[in-house]
Length: 373
Picture 1: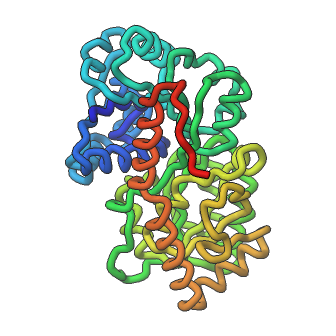
Picture 2: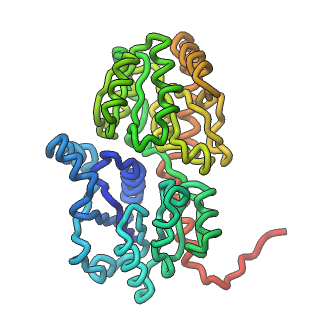
Picture 3: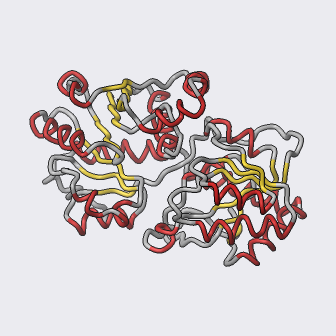
């Protein structure tokens, strides 16, 4: 099968977490013998910022870490969809694409029926920026892949698309796995971006405050940290490690005792059931995790067994101290969390789901399946 993917970037994960999952999906499809072609805009802001801050070395690092993955850069005004989609069987268009591109591909699908076309949504903009999402012209798309059931239902309720499926993110277990034990560099590491003030108070309560109170040796990696955030890190005694290539996260996790999950406010308040992909990746790497509150209403994990959940800053301090001082507890959480990923939440599982959705789309719409009594 020939799969075509249009995304913001496969090469850069600078403030672009979607690249994590898409790399894993593409890699698994390739491992099964499918033909995969990826298109990304030549002026992708993630790539621009990455190169501006770190030069060409990260682009070369990506090529070394993922020698099997490649993408084509395109200029929207010159993109020849007839050539790009001539042999396509399945086309995925990620939501972080230009509205004009999304519309053009839909029009192409309307005029050419040889492939199936799906829109892929992995962001909270369906709630926080509904006007922008409503401007995506999905009339000729075969459906939407939403990374949570609440987002899937929003597409149906708003009439943005007729068919939609839940397609959660997952860990690329070829890349994210426990590495051999190394000399401990610190107690706690957190990998995440400060962002758009969507979790500033939460970061103070569930990360900075507990680290300072416990006197932990901690490090934070990420981008878009304003000066007041950097000052807060210094005041809490937390080292700032700047941007970290995502494929280097397993090696970093191996050198610390615990990590935390601090979800952004839109996911806690309006989009329950959707964890950040870093939860999947951390658990896949076998590092104990303590999470700020979020509602796992879709039953992805076993809170309390796969990871601990802290109701507030006080309980976060208690949980972090327990994990760091009780090797048996730490090992139990790490082992159980990784088993859950391997059993249910790898990119291979998501490719299985994708291929099943593709098979559904190929069936005539008036086909009635026989169901056993």
